[in-house]
Length: 109
Picture 1: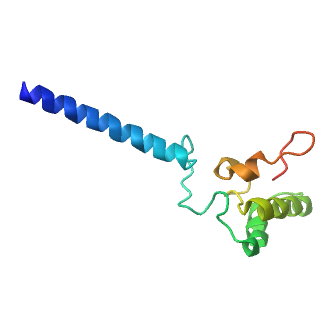
Picture 2 (picture 1 turned 90 degrees about the vertical axis):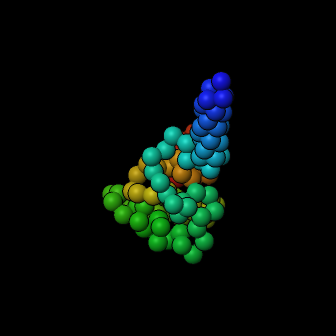
Picture 3 (picture 1 turned 45 degrees about the vertical axis):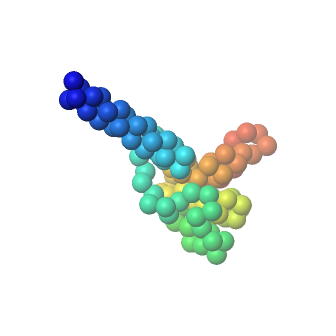
């Protein structure tokens, strides 16, 4: 009888820990994403003086370098964030991801 109670408490503890870990990941915007940013990305992760270099990195492989740099720097100034990589990964920076044009398209490259 005591062993059954111990096993039940152990299972309940494991479920609780799993639930808390899931909630913590979701509250930090990491749930469902496979990119581990180590705190380097996300809204407010940059200083305004870092925007030009981060946008150069972001726009480094596009044939539309000039407009990419213009909009990236505008978005970076507002969000203080530039997603990792050359394309995609916008989910790590919700402000950057959710800023839309008047037509409803993405504002930030």
